Picture 1 (cartoon, rainbow, N blue to C red):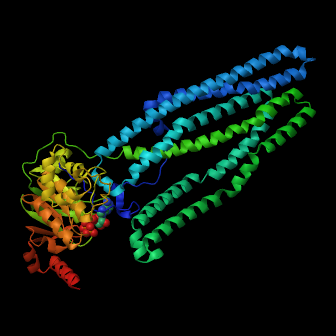
Picture 2: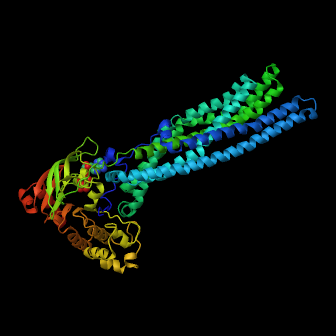
Picture 3: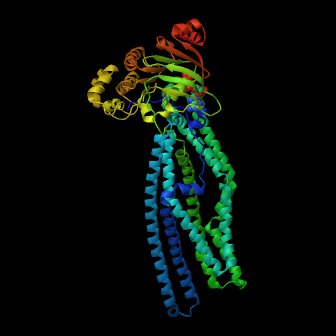
Length: 609
Ligand SMILES: Nc1ncnc2c1ncn2[C@@H]1O[C@H](COP(=O)(O)OP(=O)(O)OP(=O)(O)O)[C@@H](O)[C@H]1O
């Protein structure tokens, strides 16, 4: 195995509007209930059982209230305590049995809910990881790790909230309300409607307060996302910010912008629901409900419409009804959040995988042919147009051109970070889409500017190039990459643990380590993205020597920004606006006096200035 995943050239920021539809950052979207339920297919039975048990526990939990009312009623109407005693004891028994049953069923439903939770999270994690394994690498380039992290942590946490808490809360509260209200209707339907009117009005004002929540929530979440990327960007770039321009740095400006947007979004949300929220608090208070029930009840009693004993259910059960609204509302919020999370996870799981050939072909050799290759990120703008080129084994092809000309995009089509939208790229006669992705990636080494090292020993970091390689082969590769002596000087030599960023090694050393990895893989094709751009002259010389070892006899494609590094390339392809503007060797292109010659002159002037 040799496909090298040194970190791709750039991490495009997630709010970069160039990200297009391949980039994949989407505004949060709530998944319809039916789709959410379908996504939860593996635990549907558990969820139904959990809901049933919670509902049954709510019914059982009503018994103690009923018992209180009936005991009071018995004492109220009986001529003496002895006459009421047997009725009272029966209701004490019913109340106690109901309370015990409620606890048992609640315990069972919590048990089933948590089991379902563990099973579903395991299932979803597996699905996400499986999908990540088949997504085009370009998606990771554009969306970064943010989307994956969000799905794996925040979204799964929201789903956990649904299974473990929200579902039970919603079902329990809804059943309590239904049972309580039905009972009150049976006692006196007019009083029941008056009792219910207060929490209903409270619910309407709540609904009004929350009406604009989805739009505001979406805006708030987007603003929060921007704040977190701006914070990361700020922390990453703190040296630059402090050195140049302090608080006036562009990065800080982006951070300020994100903060302002968040404050604005929050202010808009608060302004939109201030009055209805205040109304909701008044109507939702138990004192207000008690006042209404008592006044209406006494009026009914004095009008002879209601027996005094029948006022009791409204004072005991009716006044307690709104307590179910709290869990109902919080539970519904949990369900809403979980549907948002399900929407995000669903869109991740439904991303198109990289199509694998049904009958994979093997490349004959390492000859690369570009046949009228075109590509567009968004289906509208052609970023690469009709490129015709051939890269022979044992030769170096340089891609040059102004910024944004399409060099990186063209290079990323070869390992199928993205699939061409027109034409074809062939390796050894086989279209890259007809070569199995494992074979394709192991046929090439990709070395980019930003180096990707894993949190592992130096030795294992090199061994990723070829997992079955012996230690001797690793030392040989490190020697060829001019990094062996540096490694020997590390505290534990080849067994020294590296941090994920490769801390403790200089930029040039990190790069030579990844070149050693690429040398070890022995892949016949090498794609380099101007690997020496950010190094000092000494490191650059060492890296250039290492690269010479890596590329000898291979088919090499190098994306070059500094033209002096590719003067001796076998062919130079000059891209401009995605098209092949010129092609030839250095001297030929200078003689042509076109774009390349102008870029060469400009760079020479820049170097001597
Ligand atoms: N993930 C992406 N989504 C949408 N558009 C993109 C993406 N990556 C690059 N582009 C656009 O495609 C065009 C070519 O970009 P590319 O990075 O390939 O150019 P380049 O020649 O390598 O530039 P540079 O020298 O600055 O690295 C540019 O207009 C760029 O904005």
